[in-house]
Length: 70
Image (cartoon, rainbow, N blue to C red; front, side, top):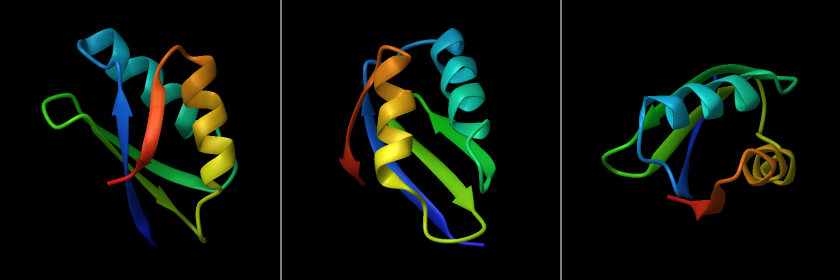
């Protein structure tokens, strides 16, 4: 399963981590989400190539900014 790492701005606490894990994890095809607050990276494990636009949309709706792949 491929893992893709994204840079996400605006994360600073455990609530941010839980929120992003939940909203990204709810997307079809996502089997795992790891949030690293220190680096500002979110690693998403998927069954196939991830849908960057869908991930960016839920991240933005949650109040954060996906700035691209890391």
